[in-house]
Image 1 (cartoon, rainbow, N blue to C red):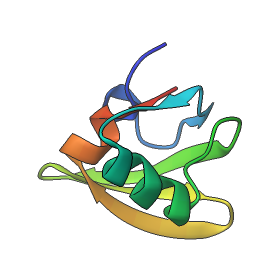
Image 2 (spheres, rainbow, N blue to C red):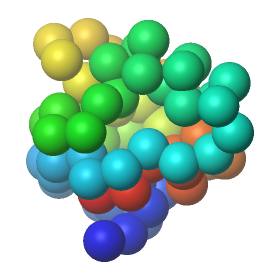
Image 3 (cartoon, helix red, strand yellow):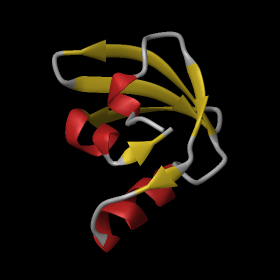
Image 4 (tube, helix red, strand yellow):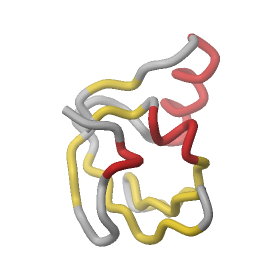
Length: 70
């Protein structure tokens, strides 16, 4: 397992676990980051990542990406 922040652009991975405080986990879950969901890193620019999760593109910062284990 590794954090989503370490995944290369264009790679598709499955979410194993979402960590962090309860508020952070709830926020990420509402965006579609749930265990077993497939995530593709579309782009990573200056500490922010654009990822495709559940047919939506979402921008998250590196702190959030570090809490998503794949």
